[in-house]
Structures are given as structure tokens and as C-alpha cells.
Image 1 (tube, rainbow, N blue to C red):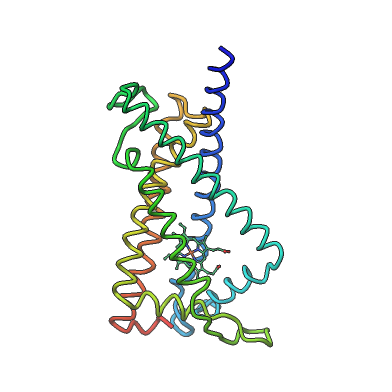
Image 2: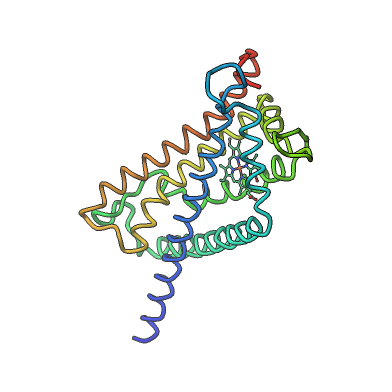
Length: 245
Ligand code: HEM
């Protein structure tokens, strides 16, 4: 009995860690997208507002990088959350597979809060794809070419992330590669966000439908936003949109 309780607790514990870290990571990708939507701002002279590129996007990146030790703390926290999510996700997925192999799991929907869809069945794979993407992404941008540019009010030249990102997405292979990864991210978040509430025991009959719709909306926002950026830049550069800096 004590053994069973211990097993149940540790399985539950892992699911809770997976759910909480998953929600944290969803918060990060949503915030990161919000910042990157600044790429859609046109260059000076194309509308009456004071915010224009490449200044705004580079100022935004500069504000982040100038957080100094706080940024280090955030990055270490993010890394810890990421690894905790990866580890618990892999262990839970392997345990589920083993249970399925022993015939303990049914293939249909288990109850009213369980929905087996393409996203739910491929979580481990979409998760691995997203993890590989992040490593490539950091090499492309964070540790990519260090273009420099002047920014208003700053004596020292700062990193020109706007130039890096727009040059990067002007190449069709880069655009296609990122689009593919963004699609997997949207699938992963669609199921992950919804099932996190189930793992945390917060997904009752009353809220199940609302959470399912909210997960769809978040995945849709992430999918459209993250897919939209490479496509917008690629087409803009190809046809020479004059409002892209
Ligand atoms: C079109 C899509 C994207 C663009 C244009 C973009 C752009 C950037 C840029 C310019 C940086 C380096 C500057 C900085 O550290 O702020 C960066 C960092 C980063 N990006 Fe992205 N990103 C995109 C999508 C994603 C996605 C989908 C994820 C996660 C699944 C992601 C995760 C990260 C992480 C973890 C960092 C490092 C943050 C840090 O160390 O402070 N990015 N991104």
C-alpha cells in the first residue's frame, strides 16, 4: 500500500512539474512572440507614429540584453524550467508507452477530460523537435553574426538584431525551416497547455471545454505570429517592400 502510494505520488509529482514548467514555457514563448511582433513595425516615414524600425526592435533587444545579472538569473531559471520539463516529459511519455505495451491503456478518449488527437499522441516527438529547434535558434540569433548599429542616446554601438533577423529570413531555406518548426511548436502547445491543467487537477467538466478552446486560441496566436514573421520578411525582401528597413 505504502509502495503504491509512493508510486502514485511520484507519478503525480512528475506530472505536476511537467504541467507547471509547461505553463511557464508557454508564458515565455508568448512573451517572446509579443516582443518579436515589433518586427512588423515599418521604417521611419511610412506612418505617423514615433516608433519605427530598425530602432524599435534593436532598442527592445538592447533593453533585454542590458538587464545584466537579472538576465543571467532569468536565463538560468528558463534553462532549469526547460530541462525539468524535458526530463519529466520524457519519463511520463516512456511510462505511458510501457503501460500501452502492457495493454493498460485504451486507444480512445478515456473520459470527458481526455482527448486523444494528433497533438496528444505526438507530444514526445514535437517536444524533441522543439528542443532541437531551440539549440539551432540560439546559434542563429543569440550567438549569430554580431552586426552593430548606433542607437539613440547610446554612445556605444549595439547589436543589430533587426539586420540579423531580416537577412536571415530573406533566404528561402531559413524561412521554410523556421516555418516547419513553428508548426510543431503550435501543435505541442495546443495539447500541452490544455493537458497541463489536467495534470494539475484543475480541468473539471465545467472548465474542460473553455480550457480546450483557450489552448486552441493560444496555439493559433503562436502559430500565426511565429509563422507570420518569417513569411512577412521573406516576401517583403523578395518584392522589396519599401516599408521594411
Ligand atoms: C520568428 C520567430 C523568432 C524570432 C524572430 C526570434 C528572435 C530571437 C532573437 C533575435 C533572439 C536573440 C536576442 C535575445 O536574446 O533577445 C532570440 C532569443 C531566444 N529565442 Fe527566439 N525568436 C523566434 C522564435 C523563437 C521560438 C519559437 C522560441 C522557443 C520555442 C524561441 C526561443 C528563444 C530563446 C530561449 C532565446 C534566448 C533568450 C535569452 O537567452 O535571453 N524563439 N530569439
